[in-house]
Amino acid sequence: MKLNTDEACPSFTRLSFHSAVVGTGLSVRLMLYTQRDQTCAQVINSTALGSLNVTKKTTFIIHGFRPTGSPPVWMKELVESLIGVQEMNVVVVDWNRGATTVIYPHAASKTRKVALILKEFIDQMLAKGASLDNIYMIGVSLGAHISGFVGEMYAGKLGRITGLDPAGPLFNGRPPEDRLDPSDAQFVDVIHSDTDALGYKEALGHIDFYPNGGLDQPGCPKTIFGGYECSLTAYPCDSYRDYRNGKCVSCGAGQILSCPLLGYYADSWKEHLWDRDPPMTKAFFDTAETKPYCMYHYFVDIVSWNKSVRRGFITIKLRGEDGNVTESRIDHGSAVGPKYKLRVLWMKLRSLAHPDRPHLCRYDLVLMENVETFFQPIPCSKQQM
Image 1 (cartoon, helix red, strand yellow):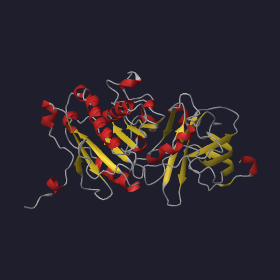
Image 2 (spheres, one colour):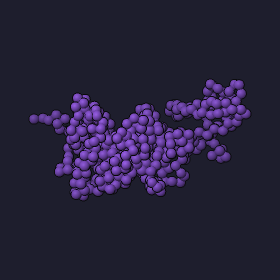
Image 3 (spheres, helix red, strand yellow):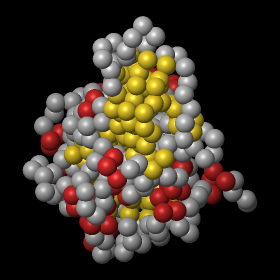
């Protein structure tokens, strides 16, 4: 008898909204993906590790609250991206039976039970020669706190935990042992992109990333590989306001890596954290609305000369070699005369993503209200570098 694809290759549990309404009891299923079997999962458990190679890195992906019962739409892409970037075991932790409910506290109450099941599995891995250094957990929503609970059971010796939008309700204000925190792994990085809704607002890791300030994410990538096509650079800063006001546009000259990178390679910046007490950093960046999501940041210095002050703003448009135009607005407090002119003594443009590139300048420019002025900047003189 020929098996169909669903029978041959186990897939993530799919439940109906009816299941969410009546509630589901907890059942955890572990599905292993490897470079050899990237699209066809193998169901494993603590008594049958299957083809899992304990000498290689093992990444656990743990989803969160599922109010409709549907599988996470991002799961397949994340699995493929992880296997594509490094040969490893990828274990999808399917606890949809338990996470599927319209009553959020019911799902949250099952997080520690999921963590205990994962510990039982990891114990068997360790017994067969695995190393805690090679265990990486990626947890989304409630899954972020599940990762933290597992890490706490191993006294923070797990290699790494990444928390994606850690759940806020029932975890906000809780002590470290009741949520994800930096002591749960050797390196903990967190991406906050829903802090005005169900996400956790405060810092939870060694480094916490806040795309677009951590609030609304227009078209924002949902996983650590969302901006994989280019390097998403973040800027350590105390607040999103300070970042937007240009107060945090340098990560320090002469360092091996000037600014932290979002995503899979975020741990390359951890050497910069241990000089801090506690070793925690907030980092901010902005994203575009469409793929590849990354934005190249530029810093603009403007020196104007005016006799009287009048409030206004300047709109700056940059046209790239591909013809695409990006636009930004700068508020200022100096427009002069009844015709609202602004005399710019000099304007300097410098790349933040590529600080080694030459700075570009424009000198002695008169701007008129509601009139676009086009110009091509030239390399700055040595005095303006």
